[in-house]
Length: 328
Length: 254
Image: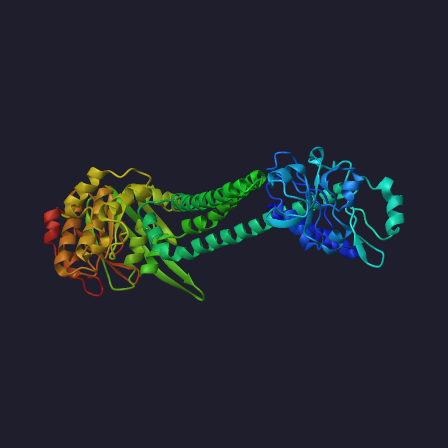
């Protein structure tokens, strides 16, 4: 499963949850390693109709930059200090301006642009509103402490977004700010659990689809093998006339079937491995997928060999008389 | 029954079809000695091929006993018959029944492979030489003439070193010259001690046999070694004497 597909699944799940509550959705701090692919989060923010949010670097080398999407209130709430400029404006958030507050490392890597200049992050241009202080470059919200997305409708439909640490102490504040029934809290843990369920569901679906495809392929193989039998009847009859036993015929078919299966499995495994190598070079973790593929390959081989017994047994039952009659 | 290699006692073969039963063989008693060349003749539908199929173990008798070298084959299952066939029997078919996608040598080797043995190249080449086509070992079967294909089939039988060769119309698809040559090869096998039983329509081939058996409507109509189903075996004459014999049978087998 790719990060993008996972992100898409999370987005859909969020949209489902939020649509049932009548609220808009936002996403929170990164929950997966985005050091190599920050684009998906910005895409998600865009697709969810959220305003552009803070972009902060993780680490100070300016190379691998994690992205944190959050409203302007984040920096204030966490007491982050700015080296230059300030946070996103309310207008930025409300109208989705392509504006950003960046971490110090990213700013350095971008040749220290001035506030108000355009900075490219993940291939997209943002107007620089502010630069975090060097010691604020590693913005991270502990999952156990939770960070929250708070989409809500306030003040006649204007949207506000908050990322906050820990909901319970802040409920009174949220109630007073948003109204008691005008917001939902989705904590990270619940989000991760939902993501896990989605991932498990998708994994199950993928396995089911793979098994169904394998079953169709096996049925095809069995059907083709059975369909070929009449044309091979004379050859089978001749072999029996020359002294071949039923078991000899069955084994010859079984081995032939096994060789076809082995070649198919090798081709499939080789193709998957090639894709996996490419995917790993793109930063995706394919280890679990490779393990799943290996397991599935073994399963398909086993089922295929078992299915191969059907045409093999059918072939072994062809008698010399049947073969002779075919020619006569 | 003395030293008979093959003994058939009261052999019956019926084909049951919905609403009726067709008797292909009716009470055949027959004994055939080792090393004889036997021609089985008779009109179409007389049961010749059915008899040959039962002798080969391809088909089973509905009733009666089939003994080979004293052993009762009646109770053998399909694999048992296949094993027996591999050790004792070789077939020569009218339509050759060679594998068209294999060359001559591979067709010869197939017989050994089917019996789980390693092909004996020397034996195969000797067999091909015996039938005069050793230079065709690498030739594709599809490029051979009918006579050459039948020689390959006979060589395949020779290479298996069987005790019995059953031939079903071995000259049926050949011209007269090739037919004569093939019958000569089969007679040569008999002279080497192999029992050869050939079903044939060709009177000119039948009279070259040591012994001629005629079937009519599933019954033994005539047997120049034995008349009318008597369960005894005629003493084989000398090969030269048998080759001089020329019998003519009327419809009653007299």
